[in-house]
Length: 183
Image (cartoon, rainbow, N blue to C red; front, side, top):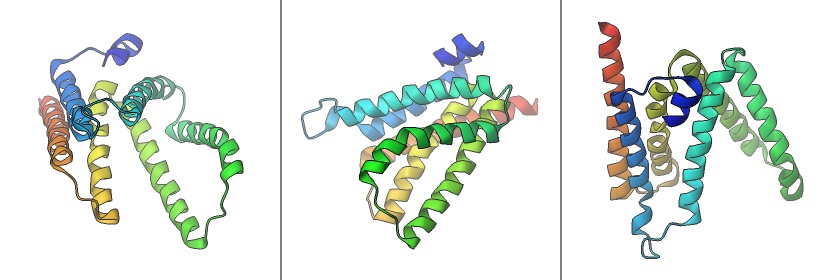
């Protein structure tokens, strides 16, 4: 919210800000760092999620800025090229040749990821960052659902409660924007 206001000149609107904050609260409930086995201490994993959230905020601002001069496909290719370069050194050291089945899964993951990145960059190109952000939080809910369906992980009360808040904040902002655009 703050980054998009400072660097993009977006107006801070109360409903978008509220939805974004509620979505972030939902993420914190899913993580529930105050209630772990070590007596409520913040773990490195929790800090990495917060660092990733900050990184995503910076990426959102850069995506919005760069999408003015570049098409989404170009930005996705740049991002993936940078990822390949960053991952190349550890990959050489730890390389294990994937099986045919794994290659098919990797190709599917690549295609799905490309579509997701293209969609997000297109959303940033066509809408305010503050509007798009609450919708990005839904990925946490989909990750929990994938864990349930593919890995038989049973979501706990924290995950379900946080997921409900995330979905509610996203539906709230979608409803507000649809209502606003209708008039």
